[in-house]
Structures are given as C-alpha cells and as structure tokens.
Image (cartoon, rainbow, N blue to C red; front, side, top):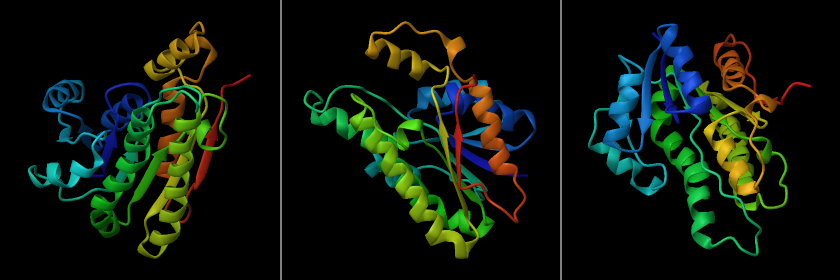
Length: 229
C-alpha cells in the first residue's frame, strides 16, 4: 500500500488531497501542529496516522519526531501547508517575514531532509504545492512571493540532487483557489470574496494526484493550474 505524508490536510487543498487518497484506500500520515489538531484530523480521516510538528518552528521538527513513532515507509511527501500575510516592503515587520519563510520554505526544506532516507529507499516522490506567487511577485506580496520563489529553488535543486536516487520532485503552482486562505487574502486586500471566481480545491487535488500517479518512466516537474475562463 502506498504511504503518503501530507501537510496542511486540515483544510483547503490539503484536505481535498487527503480525502481523495483516503477514499481510494492509500495509507495516510498527516502532519499537524499540535495534539488537539491531531485529534480533529484523525476524526476526519479514520485510520490515518498523525505526526505532531509545528511548521512555524522548523528547528524543532527533528526533536519532535524523536519523541514519536515514525512510519516504517514513506512513498510520497506532499507539502501543502502554508501561510500568507500581505503588505508593502516598507511596512512589513521582520516577524511577518520570518513566519512566512519558516512555514513556507524552511519547514518544507527541513521536513524533506528528515524524511529523505525513507524516500530514497522507496524511490518515492516529493511534491511541493507552490503558488502563482512562486513564479511572479506583485505589489504587497513580497514576503509570500519570496518564500514561494525560494520553494521553487528548493524543488529544482532537490530534483537535480536526488535523480540518481530515483526520487521524483514536482512543483504545482495553483492560481487563486477557493480556500479559507484565499478568503483571508481578500480580507487583507479589502476586496469582496466570491469563491465561484476561483479554482475549486478538488481541481488542484486532481492535478496533484495526476503527478503522483504518473508511471515511473516519467515525472511532472512543474505544473501550473489557473482558473478557467
């Protein structure tokens, strides 16, 4: 049975991906930030395992994992969790930069490093859910876009480094998607939120599963998903 470790499975794109994998009978290991969240996610996905680790504190992930039972096997690592706070460079305090870089870039890098030995054994796959902001930076998006541009660089370097170990690496770049995060973005932008204008998380989940299920003779390296006309 294929074993997937997924971050951000509590809502939005992560929940859609986890639900699809759960429904088809794959084994799930879901990374959550604390014990309370672990109970909520376990109830949402019966039979799934949970790992507790706060992505806002990537330097403590290794310690947190040392206190828990890790799975014997991981076939895919799916990074979905992320945070966003908007504002012009002139006004963004350092703490806002640090949080977004920690959750969106440093934690995926550290989590990948910690799990690479298992992924090498399974000749598995790492999939990063990036963003359209990982390809371009607009006004007021400096900190978030910087973290996502960095995530693309992480994926590109990792792909080159791990090719000889048979580990595939994919970046998915969704456009604006109808999630709770997108609603918060609209609040920060002072704009009215209409989810009908944006991509359904299920559509992004379909692209992610397509990349994960691709036969081993090929890999999808970069995949952009944009709202339909």
